[in-house]
Image 1 (cartoon, each protein chain N blue to C red):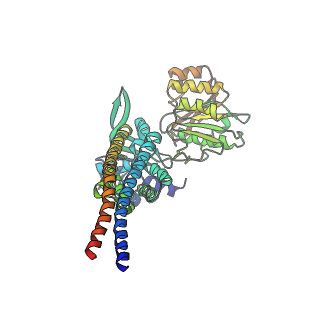
Image 2: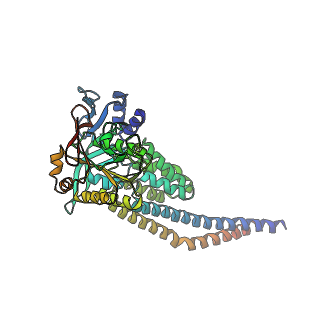
Image 3: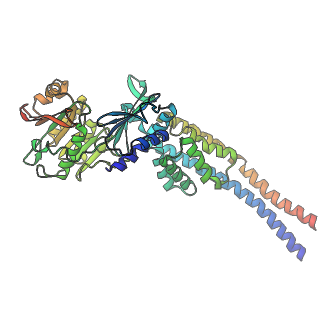
Length: 312
Length: 172
């Protein structure tokens, strides 16, 4: 995605007054990671190396209620009802695959989050597609040009989604390490494909089928039945239903690429259902990410017995 | 002979005016019924697809006749352009601009603008309920128009003929 295009996608969802400030202050969108808007607080932009208050520290622009309402109208295309499911999870995805996290007053129903009202904080996370970021990893997670069942373990904000996205693209298109094959992606939060009106905004390869906004467990089974994928990719598995669906997919002959939040192998092993899967050596490779010098830094790659294949 | 021709022409003109009055009333009712159908489609699309409003307006705009289609498509475009702050303003402006040709009465124009105050700002269940209430109100307006229609058409035709005869008598 071109930088200019990315900039216009982000500017389009901001209130006009905020849009003008960002246009004036950040003419080049290079390095912008997040835009944080909070009612009654200054507009903050998180860059790769620092955080900026706009237009300046001395005279910051304070976000008003009206500007927040206008921003939410643009983000939801004047149709908050259309994003109820996403809002329930605390975020929605906009054109370009950028993720907008929201916080406000939570409405509960039968002890479950029903919706979020009076939105007072918005965090726009700029989607970054890093083509080739999985180059280093691919030789370790393939055997005879076939992908191994792989689990990526990473703390939040360490680039696991970016990495998994590039893995999908390379597996789908094929290269010297892996034969191009059909990949089924269950994209529950529209983060991998960044689908907008059903069309993937990120490049996921020519043999990739995406089930957008679909619960992971249900989506994996649907894909196996309908699209016969050779590889299934899912991001941020967590619930026991997800893990059971992964096991089912593995038994159906599909190769699995999944990611999970965690610091290291031990933490993943201690998870109630996932740990059982690891102990049974269902996954053939484990990739542990860290955020030492750069996002997506590989701290270690392990085989099914937990032996180190590569240390970052 | 000239008098007879003149009398026939006067009678034809006034009876024609009476007929046109009746036809306009029927046409007005048809417009209101079509607008009710359009709002019914909007409600159906919202409850079935849960798609954002610009998308719904555009897809319905493609299927319905003009000028209703143009009205919805241009509203969708205005919303996508994000130049107008607030859904209500964009909705009202487009209704004024693209439905002016329908010649709706002031109270009916207000009725058409009313969804601008709630579309998009409510949760799905509430929106569906509010749209149903709105459709009920439209049905009521249509019923009101339909109730008096037959009598009005008859009165219009009779008045046309009667006024023609009256004019003929005066002029002769």
